[in-house]
Length: 291
Image (cartoon, rainbow, N blue to C red; front, side, top):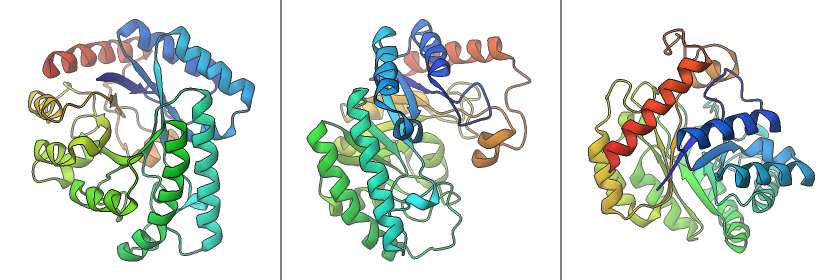
């Protein structure tokens, strides 16, 4: 398994530039991580020189780059508007092609729709019917580039389209592309699944990416609301060897606090150095729990 971390952990904005990615990569390599998770929208807007620089950063620090997408509403593959759906497919196709330049093996996230959802439409059957053919097309492009598309199962407060592992299995089977699989997240599973470990085992070889965090999105081990040893065993049972990416959100305020709905500081007033220590401690904890 490759242990990873999202780039936005230290702040309250989704914005980033190459200097920030370099700073994060340096930290993660020093702490013992294997993977850096970057924004798909950033990858979309980078020119070739910037993409090559990001690729060089990953190589310099020995990190695989995973790409995370929570598309804006104009890119909604499930939209009732055909023009919006086409715009979404063009957007995601460009992202996947740019990912090839940075040698990113996985596009992860809820890109079957848009995020955060405003729930203006909640017809699940129609959303599936509209989005599945487009994801099949995206899967064809990704497959040709050796990239996987891992669809994230979210909780009921963030989507109505995929809220359980069982739904994701059915959805991916209807897409019918090996390059399109499932992203499970312990935070969302804690809300929606009857049995977190059972869901992992049901996903089996369809599990393409994995996000980890406590029930309130703190770092693994910060309050042990999740049975990490049991989860580690479930991942072993399905021979999982891909990304295990931490996605903690401790700081309130800004774009991140608004979108993730962090309404109080969960960091204990931590400065950057303390946030670093939290992260190092959590990685050691998780590796021991999964050993």
